[in-house]
Image (tube, rainbow, N blue to C red):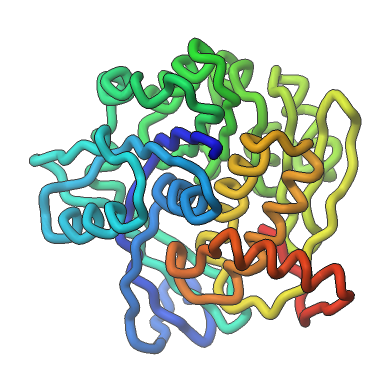
Amino acid sequence: MPRIVVVGSANTDLIVKVPAIPAPGETVLGGDMARAPGGKGANQAVAAARLGAEVAFIGCLGTDDLGDAYLAHLEREGMDLRFLRRAEDRPSGVALIFVGPDGENAIAVAPGANAALTTADVDAAEDAFHGADTVLLQLEVPLAAVQRAAELGRRHGLRVILNPAPSPTTPLPEMLLSMTDVLTPNRHEAQALSGTAEAPASAAKRLRGAGVGAVVMTLGPEGAWLLSQEGERRVPGRRVPAVDATGAGDCFNGALAVALSEGRSLEEAVRWATVAASISVTRLGAQPSLPTRAEVEEAIQEGKTGISRNTAYNR
């Protein structure tokens, strides 16, 4: 069984389906509000756990009712939560999500306790890195904690996967990029990191030139672009009827970490993760949409029969 350490955020998502994403100053009447567990770190941790990995999650929740409910949820997912800290002076993180009729979304995040995660928290969780295969990181917690986790990953010989989301507003430290084995931006994040609005191949080359081992750039309906020492190529998306894109990228990253930890090649791992992410967009919500391993394997077998869906998708 692959062992994965995830260091990141946990938010409660408050979701409203709307006829159109509101423009600045616009009020839009939507459907009933839905509440679901989310946050990029926890989403990726739950995705990996449902796909068969042994997962240790390192993060920070408040001591409020939202934090209590979230902790109970994560316990039901069967993860190692020894290093999930409760911050008494901060509320639990919350994300406000608008979902349009085409599945696209707009999200505002109140980080709360996620912003209280420190390098000391990561150091206290070093036992989780012993014997693990991969450490999976994102940017919804303080950058110092992210970099410290990458350092521990390197020290213990783990594969380091960095999902640079949300899109950084300043360049990432060269040291962090040099410790990253696989960087997984979407098109917008790649452009922000590389400082260019060039085509995916050019942006990926700039990022790999910054010291990253390999770049896997997700391209929405167009699939994903891979650039590594073996070369570059595009992996196509899978055709599905998209309902809600929230958490699709997190599903992709969790699945990618599992597949690589099982010894699959990068291209094979991306194809497997694409199938997992395509399942997630057919359901509403981030973690409620995350598939099990059996569902992914069933979809792969279905694809081998030539059955296709309506809309290409891979976040």
